Image 1 (spheres, rainbow, N blue to C red):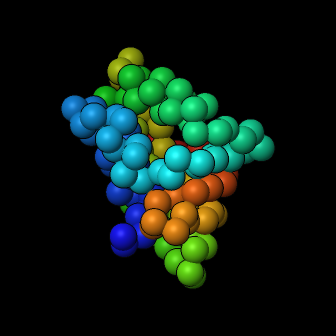
Image 2 (tube, rainbow, N blue to C red):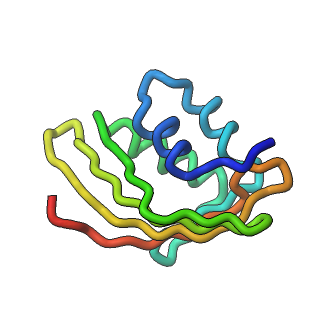
Image 3 (cartoon, rainbow, N blue to C red):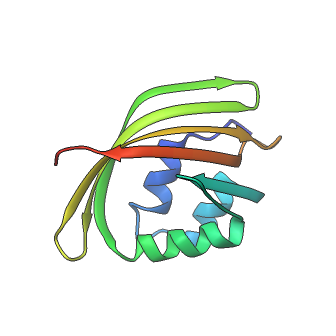
Length: 119
């Protein structure tokens, strides 16, 4: 399997509300996936719960990749995303991600941190 990209995962999991969430998550994230964001680590079940909650609040968005690097099973990427929430509010953030792939090319672990940008 070709290694996945976080920008494709974001589009499938967050920005395509008609796409089946379980299928999208299984396409991009390994069964033993862990996610660390600003110091909090979630196991796969916690990540699915968080994504489900967030997905229900977002009505649209874009992601622009600034930098991306793969080295064997290691992955790093930096992107800017802009989202529109169901209440009409918007957000724009720059995110840096570092992680690893499982042998099948899906994400095994990602650590992210970011900051807000002017909308």
